[in-house]
Length: 576
Ligand SMILES: Nc1ncnc2c1ncn2[C@@H]1O[C@H](COP(=O)(O)OP(=O)(O)OP(=O)(O)O)[C@@H](O)[C@H]1O
Image (cartoon, rainbow, N blue to C red; front, side, top):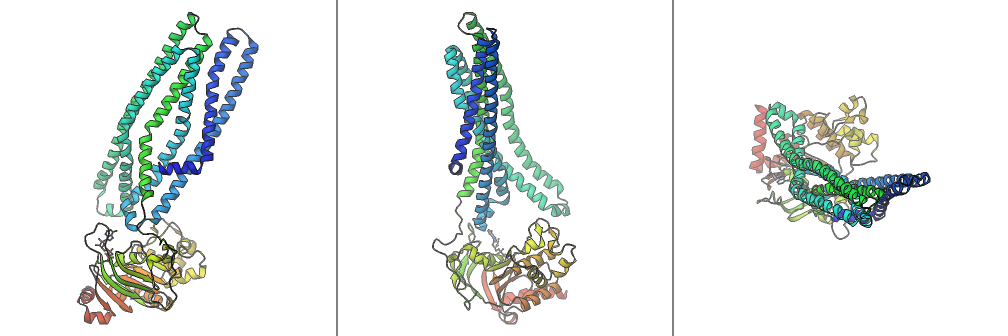
């Protein structure tokens, strides 16, 4: 509720205007039955054409004005609910960027999508309906009852009895739908998750002939969601005929009692018409309001899902004091100083007491078996997680004392899984530096060994990139991701197993071009292939997060059994 209240406070002028217009519409609606009574009793029954015309003109005027007010009110209400959707989506986007990688993964991509789409759409729709149908209902009901009481207290009592029945019915339905509604969004998360996996993993599923299994897995998720929806809809299916029955019964009672009163002279014919109209209006508004109220549990569940996410405090945050600025050269570019790190909930640290330095212009390579913590090192330097002990220094300043933006501006990163964004090649390359010239883009492509294939594309730098870069091969994607990092002028370049999809010749050509052209930054190359790191200035060998060797290729062959084992196993493979 906090975020809804904050939104309404931020837009209190617009909210007040919407409510005022809706009340104007209610006044118009309530005037019509009174005018109908007037036209029947003083115009039609008295045979006075003048009164019929005069009152008729008033009815027309009231109808036109209240329709105008209603249209304007609807417009303002829709505007408010769209604004709410826009602001909540912006908040969610900011939060998703602020959360640490582990916090983001804990929420999950599918749930993030459901929250940004379905949950917010739910809330937008409910907000519009509450403003239009629930807010005017109490006033309309109250005024109707008062007007009816003035004409006939007996009729007012009849209205109250029927209203009580509707309210009891709504309360029962609300109670029953509560649990169902809350679980529906979670089921939608599950659907999103399986659909995402089935769509993105389509090649693997087909290659493994796993279509039947995937169908049954998706089928189960759809069925769970459908079962809940069917149960919910069954509840509402019962309501509609019951409501019509109640309306019919109320009309019959009003006309019956009104007729009897009229015969005894206690009520004029026009008044019976007015009371009948008030009763219908009251019931209609009450039923509409009640049906909106039954959707509230679902909206509340959606709001709660957003609140939980928005209230999550990022574990990685900017320093509370004014962030420092990295010291000028010749400080060591990066220093890991006795760094240890464990993922939340893990028993063992992934990185144990690690110390090493990245120097400007030098290449440092990290090698180790899979799961030894190499990618985690890159994430720690980017401060996607915070370390538990030790220090990571960028030009002499602890990264926790820098703003995240300043830190990441100094680092060019090529992830293990090259990811490109939909758009053009140029747009992707300019992600790191928007003002890079075409010449600079071509230079980055040349070093990344991507110049030839981009030149062959009919649109060159303007060639389209599909979502995720799926219209390029794995090796082409990697080279474009490398070029993207090179366009950014940085102090540190991290290549996280970024040469794995390249053939040995392209790998060698790329490293040669890197050494010759990109001389200033410190380079950190995480690799699986010994051939990729042969010429590195220093190689760090990791074994289950512990440093077990450091030196050049030749030094390590002499001094580090783990490195020798890796090197020999790869040589054997090559010889074989
Ligand atoms: N987000 C995470 N949450 C929990 N544990 C994680 C997470 N990411 C990685 N790990 C664990 O940390 C360990 C190191 O993972 P990391 O990805 O750093 O290894 P790596 O050396 O880069 O492996 P590879 O060469 O296979 O890419 C692994 O045991 C992995 O299971």
